Length: 316
Image (tube, rainbow, N blue to C red; front, side, top):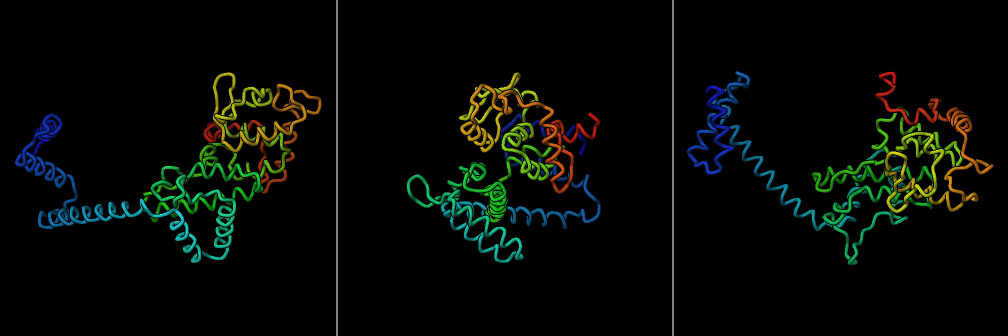
């Protein structure tokens, strides 16, 4: 069969939706022959391939039917059942991970971050849960005021482990979750783990400045000169000179908390002891001292928080 004939057959399919059975069969034969011609010559006999094609068709149809039945079953399964199944599976992990995940999920349950009951007072089903999604829960974990920074991060990792297991166990009926903070910074030159450790050695004010730079501010200067009225806490965004940037919900929440406790209520978000704009020299010095205290000993500067991996590799 030449390519011209093949192209004509494809054109026929695209233009004529009313192909009869005979035309469809002939088209299949032509396409099947083309596949065979381009495939390996070993085990290429019709007696070998045709039964295999039939078996493949049968097996895939049966599997799709089973998956459809399984998905229908999953719709009405309460979320608490899926979580209980995951907790049961943790028992098979080694002691370190077993303790880690048990403590993480215990914290989540005690803080009631995961809701098992819907608005009607009934058990929340997997069908309802997948519409809610994981990201709101992860943001709520990081917004919890009762937990320390490291408790929040451990809880996020425990929850993500649950979401991955749930996606696997339900054949992706409930998709897996992801860490929005890690995803947002995956292309940053400064690794997320180094950054998390680094900000623990900064003052509250300087840590907020560092987070704004790392999570998407266009420049250091625009953060140091940031006005309070540029922050929209309801939409979780900040208006800069050229654009608006949506920041993590927990970061905007931390800014609001900082502002409420701030004695100097002038128009600048961040001020020094004199009520003036924080100086770049101070920030450089604070970052340098904090860098010396992290385990990697990586030098972190305000500028390096803005850098992307490809900018470093290309010498930008």
